[in-house]
Each structure stands twice: as structure tokens, then as C-alpha cells.
Image (cartoon, rainbow, N blue to C red; front, side, top):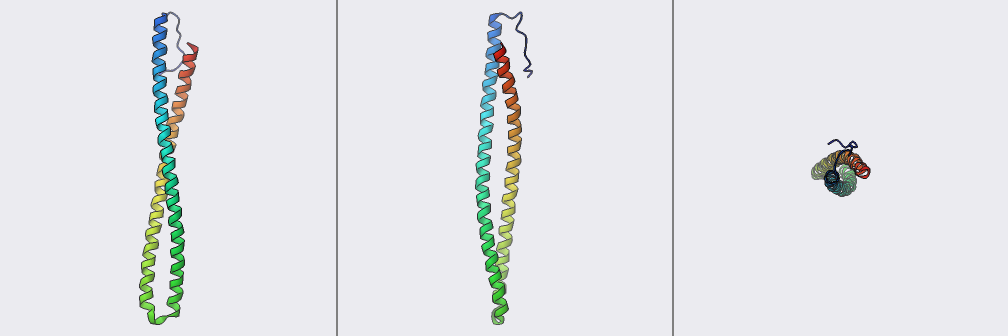
Length: 142
């Protein structure tokens, strides 16, 4: 829609009122849509905070598992009689580490995706802000 200032010369008072009412309705609709998008962005931010917390917890657990694995490696070197049993425990810990690293990567990808989506919403909001300002100026000038 073209929001450039339009001349009201030659328009009747009723026509001006109708035009102003139309622009006001459009302004209200844009503001409502703007608010909805702001709510979406706030939800995405909250989701990202929860995901970041989950990622940090996984990383802490990952570090804990790495420490346990180092202890297992030392024990294998000291106890050759139980080498087969300890090797199996090491393999299980490695599997858990890989699964946790994969989970951490998945969470990071989700965060990046949500940040990209957030940026898109913010771009739309900036466009809407410009439209809202143009409409407000046009309404004030009437």
C-alpha cells in the first residue's frame, strides 16, 4: 500500500473522515500483527534460553563422563586381569559420549535455526515499524 501523503484537497469532510478511519483501521491491524510477531520472538527467545540451559547441562555431564572415561583408561593399564571387562565399560562410555555430543550438536542447530527465524521476524517487524510510522504521520497530517 502506498503510504505517501495524499492530498485531501477537493475531498469532502465525510470523505476525509472515511479515509482517516480506513487508515486508522489499517494502523490498528498492523499494530496487532506487530504485537503478535513480537510475542513470537519473545517465545523464540525463551525457547533458546531453555535450549541453552539444556546444552550447558549436557556439556557438564559430558565433562563428567570424560573424567570417568580417563579413570577407566588408567584402571585398564593397572589391571590386566580385568582388561576385557574394563574395555567393554570404556566402549559403553564412548557410546554415551558420542550420543551426548550428537545431542549437543542437535541443540546447537536448533538454536541457530531459531535465531535465524528470530532475525526474519525482526526484519518483518522493522518493515512494519516503518509502515506504522508512515501511517501515523499520514494520519497526523490529515
